[in-house]
Length: 320
Image (cartoon, rainbow, N blue to C red):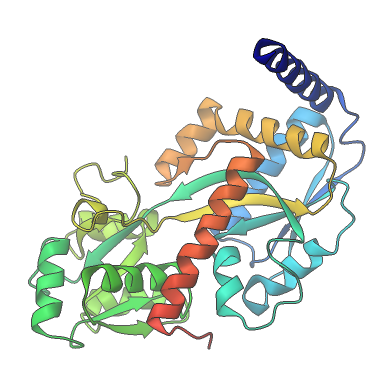
């Protein structure tokens, strides 16, 4: 009986895969909504993936930048799109964070979307001004314990991924440090270079030149494993077991989109991420290609929602 059930399951799985491959999709242009202004990592990644979709399927992919409201404006547009696979949404860590950070959203984050694919994960790097007398996470925590509230750290703004990573470090390290929010990573980095703030989690690529020049000291990366861009720099988790605070990116579409279309989008995205040129590009950017099924991405996303909800609650974070 068990063998028969396994046979039926395998047959149905193969049939669904074949149907996903053969379904007549796409037959018209695809729109990817990016809830950020042009030029950022979400926008760049959407354009790269969109171009690859066009090359594969011969249909135009339009990147539609809809910034504003802390990603809410563009996200709301995607939530109410026709569920036919022709409107996609670029999502990132902020999509999981807004559930807890914003009191009333015009959509239900878990109900109104279907996860498609986890595209990339990008660890950040914990950098300090060289004047701060620490060279490891352990030493930073020890200094913060000796001077509670006196050590300050910068971020790109309240509720951003770099802010939440800093709060997670404080919570797991059992210390109190003072958060200094900026309107973006660039002004935060400028003040870190000048010594106005002591440390921050920075995006690897733009921070790397300052590390190589000795203007900033890299003491840890925020991912689950060491970064290929900084192989000699340990992870925060090597000191604080279980710490992980990577920025991540993916694609969602409207709920009730046909399963066969979601599967086809997922499989083509994974094929693109596995291509040599895409992998080389992502590694140069300090990112790691994603993978997995829509179900695995859905489970990952739910875990991220729960994780950052705890951090936001415990740290008392509120949107500006």
